[in-house]
Amino acid sequence: MTNISLNRVGVAIIKDAIARAEEFQIKSWTAACGATLVDMGNSCPGSWKAGQAFVEAGFGGQGKASYGRMEIGPFTVPTIDVWVDNPVLAVVASQAGCWELGKGEFAEIGSGPARAVALADRWSGHGYRDPDPSAVVVQLQTARVPSDTLCQTVATACGVSPEQV
Image (tube, rainbow, N blue to C red; front, side):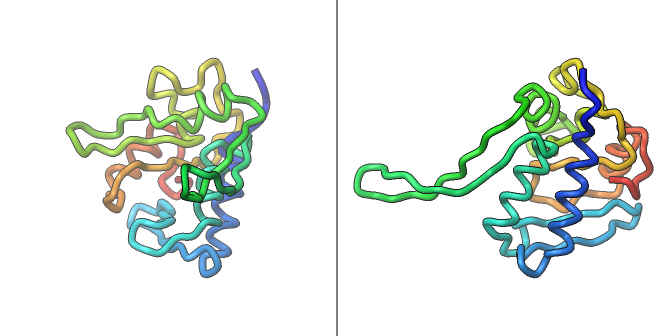
């Protein structure tokens, strides 16, 4: 389908955010298993720039995000404007939160470019598999810090070491 690596671009976006952690008001650390964890606003302030990086990494670099505003009656509210170059890759193969990484009402849901490597849900990949899964970006929909077990589950599904998550 293409030789674009959603993960290579997503990893570069996240590494840039980590390098600018103070400016983005985010935190990163290494889990015991070696995975890199990044908090972009759960237990730290986060920022508009962190949100923009999160969205663009989730699209694997196949989309852009910017901020605007719109009027709703007498109110002016902030907006995030997104556009994608390749909707099948950016959204269906990557960004959509469809990867169930646990069971139960509060189970973690994964999204992001790692889905295009693990191919673990019915929508991931959608005819595409990342050609360079040397490191992967998974975005978790959870309020909890990911456990080592969860990080290792992602690594195993993607065929990489936990240090590459």
